[in-house]
Length: 231
Image (tube, rainbow, N blue to C red; front, side, top):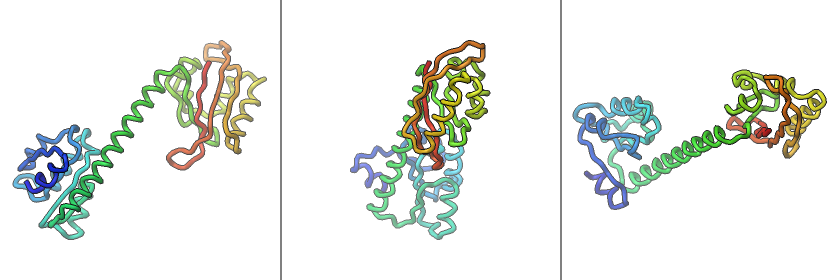
């Protein structure tokens, strides 16, 4: 009730559970944040946190754990290890509680935005006619969109497991050197790649392709080429 009195005036909608069993029945992916007291009459707070984290839909749900009995570093570490994002010890000030809640909600919003962005990107990549691809500076294919199989007439597994030189083997020999040099130039400081060439599909038919790419940096800090191929 104390936390409700603090949070509701700030515009938060609070739903309370008196026991761990009630909390398990109440919590869903529609909840933005769980404030969990370690001392519960039925299920221990640590065990409840483990059970919440074991639910796939709740893996990224922010959990703020609070305890007035288990206040030493060992118990704080156990709380974090069971899945709590923040572990506070009583007495908790109003400012500390609100700061922790707002920090976790910012994290929740950022995670939601990231997932929506990824879902939007996957939908876009799946439905646009162009082939989306990415390779590293050594020519290793890091990604190719599913529609590549339809456009290039080659098995998707082959396109994704190979290297750029395997793709070049299907390029008209009169264009192959020019295409290879364009890729090399991109990683040597070029701003972008823009090249047209003839490509032999898996069924033997020759088609004209337009390949455009830019140099970027992936999440591991590696230089990569990200591009689009259109026919």
